[in-house]
Length: 172
Length: 345
Image 1 (tube, rainbow over the protein chains, first blue to last red):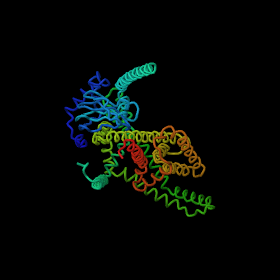
Image 2: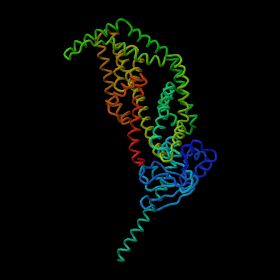
Image 3: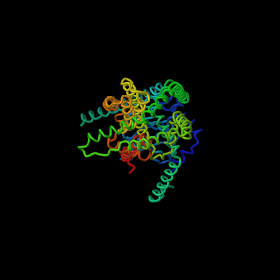
Image 4: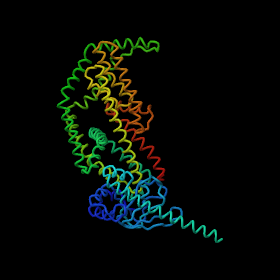
């Protein structure tokens, strides 16, 4: 396991910052923002480094923010079954629900290779809304759109499962 | 490497580290004090800097504007008000050091002893106690603010710390958080955010409350025709920062001066009742509106903490003991709760 304490203190931020900005631009939340806005966002985010196999957060823990993958890959899995529900890579993000509400994590996130992630907390979002209200509103709107899309998709899935259940009942 | 060390070695290392940090902090106690004062000022001024930043200015420009504003205000204050204030201070000092004050306090002591005889109270010795209190408090305040070396150090270092705390405070906090191991990163960030919010509310609430109390006291004392109402009002406001004991200490100079000027108990009673009314307004209106819930501590705990803070660290200890204990309490209670929720144990 890497010693994240020392690696975070002595990290070389020059190239890392550039890669981080590119990764932020690739996300639907921060994409298409102006360069100055991306820099403002990047200034408040926390860059973290994880070794392959290291747990980022565990299912059931309180969540206070979301992660953006700058470099590397992350598996999202259910604790009980151990089933992997998603393999995420550079530019992907996860844990975004915790940006709006401090709720328990619904799954475990684990780095499947050495990874660099950026963490955006609820407090950072409030801070951004406070000091850069326009940018904060844009991010909040985009977050709302993503969650709305997921809700629509979940509703569709639920509807199709209900239809399937009705069909199975009628069939039997 | 640490993962392979036995727990008792880890404990010894942690103990040595903590002792080292304690020793280091005690050797640079003055700097720590100044840093804490600058941090409190930073909490008060931060919303103003954020406001200018939200209007599109950079953090550096926003901080510089606020700083220039405060410095200009202080310069104006020194040139316009200081001569009057020093006159008022000299007048207060003359009133208090005159024989009239001693006579008045002796008379008060006799009346108090007569009134409380049924409780078996005698030999109150108020004069000696006041002298002792004045020596301790006065030495604390005067020794701290008037000593030329510390004054120079304060004048240079507090604004220096304050400027960089306002400008780069977020970056300092970010760097500190980034140094935590991944396993405890979210836990520490969560705890620091909660502590920051609570401390910010407490400090800004206390500042606003004291400023309002100072203004009301100045207004009321002026209406009652008490001399040197401005300095006395400010004194009432500043002492109001110390929970429970502060208002009592703050009431002594206006009451004594009012009675010395008029030579009777009636003026003292009117001023006492007015200050009591201000305290009632403070407790019923201001505290619930401004300070409430910023600190969830039992009144008895607050009183004990203030006394202990004053005993060990003087006036500064009385002022800082409550926010420091509130932070310690938050770390202990919220920390334990979060620790369980994060399932570290």
